[in-house]
Image (cartoon, rainbow over all chains, first blue to last red; front, side, top):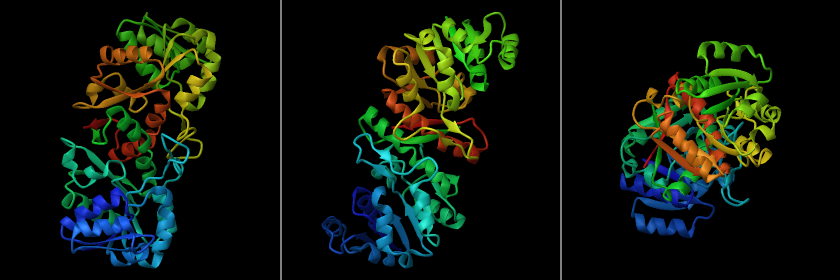
Amino acid sequence: MKIGILGTGIVGKTIGTKLVQLGHDVKMGSRTANNEKASEWVKASGANASQGTFAEAAAFGELLFNCTSGMVSLEALKIAGASNMNGKILIDISNPLDFSKGMPPTLSVCNSDSLGEQIQRAYPQVKVVKTLNTLNCNIMVNPSLVPGSHDIFVSGNDAGAKAKVVDILKSWFGWKTVIDLGDITTARGTEMLLPIWIRLMGAFQTPNFNFKIVR
Amino acid sequence: MKIGILGTGIVGKTIGTKLVQLGHDVKMGSRTANNEKASEWVKASGANASQGTFAEAAAFGELLFNCTSGMVSLEALKIAGASNMNGKILIDISNPLDFSKGMPPTLSVCNSDSLGEQIQRAYPQVKVVKTLNTLNCNIMVNPSLVPGSHDIFVSGNDAGAKAKVVDILKSWFGWKTVIDLGDITTARGTEMLLPIWIRLMGAFQTPNFNFKIVR
């Protein structure tokens, strides 16, 4: 499948590398067509990897991943352009972490709204599915890095898109349990997990953990 | 031990009943000395149970539990009176859930502050330990209602008070793992778990679940 990744950070690279390994054609998008971090990733990832602008990556992908940092996601998506994204599934992994006031970061939006909702409102014809934003990126594409069973969540308004994303998470990335929280407003819940995630990383001195809902 | 419980709701009753069963002397406090819900609880709970005002319960207890609903906790504690609480451990189970704008509730304080911190700031000589606010009250005092291992958290500034509370959680209530997140500012993390907790309860149609941190 042709897949567009928005963002050249560690999340974008990790997702992109996994997708290339799975045999997909992946274009990594950024503000500029010749972004250095994207170039390095393309060189390291082989013939199925390419780079371009946000708009080029969005136009290229039949499926899109938002791996930009949350504070700039809306700006990045604006550059990507609605016409390049409309009708497509956008897997939104971003978190609205605001580091500008020091550590620990706060959320730039939370409680009565979420970044997932902001993106869905801004692009009503894009099928936004929020997921994977509650854990470290290495575990996103390799759940077995954390032993035993543990969970991720999906939030989104389009049932068909959510079902496709759940299938992708299971068959491509190896997730066994994906909890459907409901519509995109439930992204508030997963984005608001970040404050405890950050404190747990501090307490454990490792990002290699994940939430499990036991019942 | 003499224990004061602030609040006559389901959380206060459940905690109070467990403490009486364990042989402690428990006074349930409310705005009025003859609160009807407290009277019913006293009748049902036997000779070691009593009721009184917030101030009387706070003065009575060597150990205090804040089981008031979060939106009125600061007001209830003001009535309880600093002089009746100073030097004591206050186990804070409250969550700042605001139902006034409809469902799902929002948090009246979050992100850059928390109710736990507000209480600690208002009563600097009280040893506030935030815990048990991330799960249903029946599971609080009976972790085995959820099968297997699962976790609760503690947040607080006083290491000695936290150690005592962890011991209480383990030896009185049967908790096996209690994760120390750090100082009282980490209460932001556990209070901000409530939005996903509420959505999970909606998805599962039961409050009988809990978080586990797998690593």
